[in-house]
Amino acid sequence: MKKLLLAGAVALFGLSNAQIAKGTVYVSGQVGYSQEENNNNNSKAESFRVVPTVGFFVAPNLAVGAGVGYANDKVTLTSTSAMTVAKSEVTQSAFVASPFVRKYWTLGDKLYFFGQLEVPMEFGKYKEEATATTTVGGNTTTVSSSDEANYTSIGVNVKPGLDYFLNKNWTIEATIGEFGYNTSKLDVDGAKSVNNYKFGLNLSAVTIGVKYVFAK
Image (cartoon, rainbow, N blue to C red; front, side, top):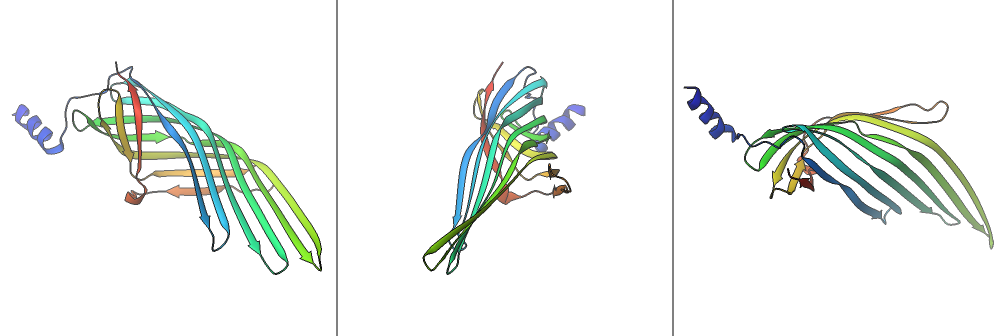
């Protein structure tokens, strides 16, 4: 009877006994640059990320690891009037680290469902620069200002996803949605923390990546 129930569970849920062995190591990460321009309001947003990630299976289907790298974001706004051209740039650059724990559940010989608990952190600098150039009667005057401050951002996130092994060394993984909390604060007197919450599955924000597995 127990064998029949087990066979029924395998048939119904697609479960199998395939597991990722203890001691397995994998590497992945994020490297990318994006740029978005809006000519209607003369704005440009640039983003650069390089965050390599290493994971180590401390037990079958249970991995711990961390991503460590660098991030830079810049937003430029330009406005023009009859006599004045104003430009502002806001830049955030940071060292980023994200330790995590990831648990896998086997769905098939090559397909796994996982849940990842991570603690993303950023330690960086926020800088805002502004210039205004005014021309009147052939005379040009430029006024500029600059402010900067260190900032810290820490969060706790849970991400569900699927991982498919193309072969023993390469996998494709996808995460769907994010559940978590993040708080950030500028290191200046009187600055208040900014808190963000993320809850829910978002099919329009699926992230897909590849990783290399050092198979045992």
